[in-house]
Image 1 (tube, helix red, strand yellow):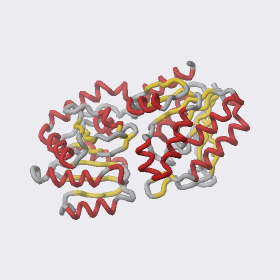
Image 2: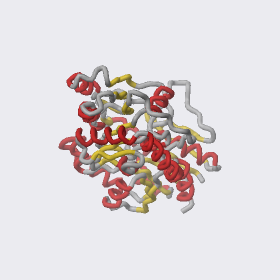
Image 3: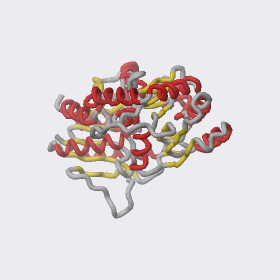
Image 4: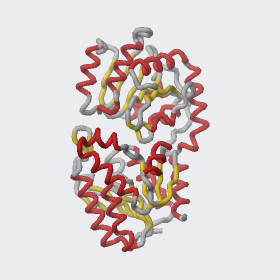
Length: 379
């Protein structure tokens, strides 16, 4: 089958869950004997084009910074959408399937516009569906524009993949024009490893971008509360971003500069060792399309703490008391209570976290979703 994969980023030039998914998908389809073309933006240095065995990589838009102040810029997705439109106008008949991501939306609209002319099928991955309230918070008075474009994308005839029940429900509510497959597996599952004991003093870990919606300042407040009962608790907050100055100020306000470290982004082996020895990982985000870090931590016997929010699908991956806790309501006090519960549960919680991972590893593995996608191509 002749397959066109469309995504504006390519792993490892850009690193993220979706990037890993499309790289794995391209490699899997090529290994299965399909003819695969990957349309993307230029991210590599001139004269050093990327190579993936069995995959033709075609840049359809120039290199550009995708984010500004923690938010996606509008110009790069527009240029990418135009590049997809021009490419499919010329080459659309050479593809049986165009497989893309709903976001950035303009590529899906371009593929939908030309589908009647060329006859290819559209398969679309919906990692997230934003609510109208979130669009309003993100774009202000122009939020209705983003919500309308998202709705238009749902009206394109397609076979859709979703990765959480939260976004499955939202996509159905949008009135998707097509069928929906729920694929919960996105994790590159590591081999089983006996969990390490939590280090002493007990250390909380956060890893990710430092942007306002991650609610890291709320975590700092929670640590300050928890230390009233357990003053030896420490934390390491890995990552960087525009919200870092505010986080530093919050740490200083609570007098925690000697207890909370901010090492920035680090090498993978450093993060791996820190995660395995952490008391727990905490992701208090108000928006997570999946929550991959919960699975990655559980594989290492490390419980996870997440917080409720209308746009947070990560709560679907936490079974309270078994592989972590859910802060509900999402307050500093509730997070502090969850931290103290993880501390009090000790090694028993690490053992039950390993058991939870063993029960869910196959279901949540990216391999299980790749197999399901292969089936969907023949459907």
